[in-house]
Length: 328
Image (cartoon, rainbow, N blue to C red; front, side, top):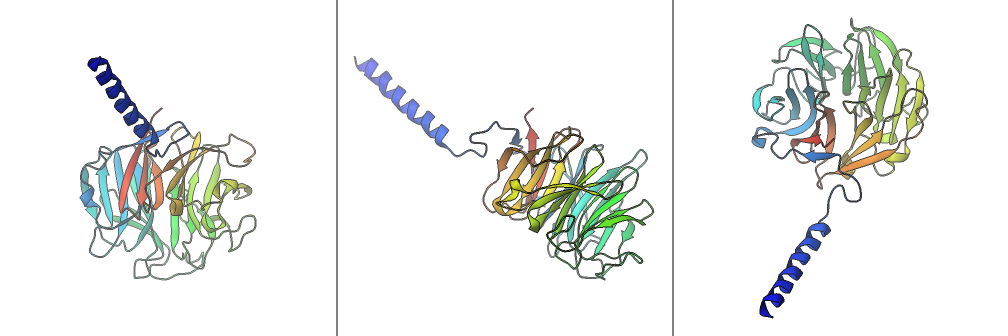
């Protein structure tokens, strides 16, 4: 009798632990989990010594570049995809905002948008993987809107195609609210955008990316929408706003299979996973999943490893970059 009573008590206690486990708040509560946090990346988080504003993946060479800000800190950190710190550099980088890695058949380069107000600021710069300055776009230290000579005012982010064509969203709170396409010899191909809320206008265009169907996607941050353009003509194709009532989009990146768009929403500490439309109508956004980050994490910009599908999140609140691995 005593044995059966003891078993019943143990079962009751075990059951209460199960209930507690299921009651524990989950970032994917009520939905199928699509990503899991890689708690072992990076191996030594103490290398993050400033505010981590941006991250870019070189999926061809298995490298991850992180741009951070702060006094007397290295502005660019380089890690392996496994999370080992490799090296850093600091020359000619003032206040990194966006970062992008371009791989071609013969070379690799790292592009950084610099929103600083000193002698290196208001520029888009191309570096070798080791940090050697190769090219400066814009007039260093001078904010402006001119195309000849080329000027930026706090350029937010850049996307470069293998052809060398360049897409820049300019700027992060400055006088410009525009999307600019440049040729591989840095001449204007087309430009769209002024300050406003209308079609093709922007209020802080903050992030830019391309899909597999020749469309340019822009996080129109303070208008709380994503706008889409034809990459050849610059023609406006549509916009999404219904998914962003709580907070505007800060970052836009496609998953490796181009089925989903990963969007960072900084003020609510969330990654939204949206269904990417096929060729044709843009339609309206469909949120298929979310990843809720910890309070005050503040995800700013993200990038995706186009080989493994891993998502890297630069978090200015937590002052770290985190890696999320796809589960399927």
